Image (cartoon, rainbow, N blue to C red; front, side, top):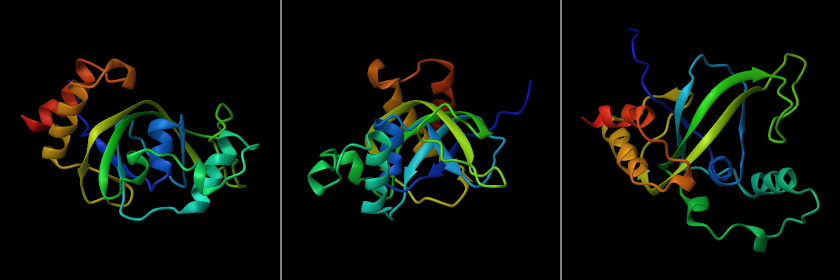
Length: 173
């Protein structure tokens, strides 16, 4: 039996974290590769990417939309900063992915790396937490709270039962 790899977290500035969890952003563009695969805790740091990021998201979703302040979502999740907001599954990291509108075109070195995401799950109650650069290991009590929230979440949010949730439950045991 192999060694169990701890669940990892990634800090992603808003509104990009919001786009992953609610707008179908299925690729995270990064300048670096990781061997990690599995559940990835999404943390929204205390800094916001700003209105330019909302404009970029709007153009990706529908280039015909003219961005204005009235278009910004009236969703509290979009404004959460300094907290864990959800979980996705990191299924692969590739270069030159062409299957998603969210994948940025590669430069001459093949960057960015496209982190392929699926199964976003939003936490009903964001968990205040400090973020870090690169991948980081969330605190055991935060993983336990994530497990509690995902265990009780409705199926339409994509909460998975059984083995995947056990990663979070074991952390809080």
